[in-house]
Image (cartoon, rainbow, N blue to C red; front, side, top):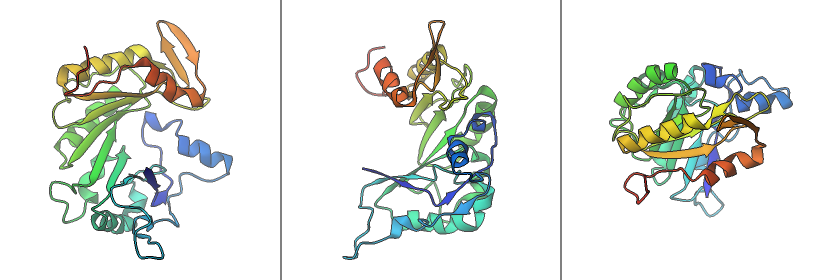
Length: 245
């Protein structure tokens, strides 16, 4: 079982991938201002206990962290140290987060970070070539134990071959959701896959997005089918597996 932990909520749009942010869409339905970053009531979720004294989140769980914000957003600077402490205390669980602000990494890590907490997986997004060329060199050099590149929403054909190598566990690619979604071209997905295979990096096609182009044809794909259609493509590739290339 996976657990969602959002210690704070809200963010500021930063780059082209943020244009149709799903958090902004959800908040708009409730007339909530997504640009206002607020500390959540469940801030201390990882440390909450049952009546018998055991943790509510059992040992070994994957905790998806800060998916309605960015863990490195500036507004959360006063709260982040305490969040790190909770991750350190819950060394029996794994924490996974995704950031567009890898350039803030050095100013946001705790004093005892060292080469990275062994239970923390930090993913970096790169939605187009410009953001890949800016973020990935910083990401590659950052002392993080587990790294994945997230190309979602994938907005154009990208060349990641310069950056791919043993330092990255996986590349995850997918389209954009929502009524205003921009097109994701299947050729871009396949190109990324080939780059990963060449460099020996695992690849996962996560979702098609709402507007998908394949073989020159455009498709509108409902939300409930976007992940399913990506799985049906059968193009995921795992390093050291018996995949046929």
